[in-house]
Length: 101
Image (tube, rainbow, N blue to C red; front, side, top):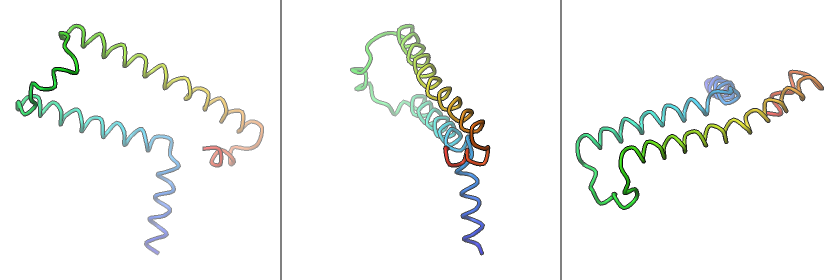
């Protein structure tokens, strides 16, 4: 009985649109706080300066460019997927959306 409840709960959670992005957001937040804590405590060596030798303004510009690029790259497949799901739902039935997901 317990395995059926866990299996049903897992299936309901796994079929949600927001389960994986929610885990990724929580993980990114935890990683950000961990890295900020390491930076403030001074446990990060200065040996890592070989990765980026610029100043803060250059780093801010680089991170802004990378973030904008990632958002536009993620938006394209997301919109294509939504259009494909909409067409599948209109041609067949909304119950078949689970198969396409």
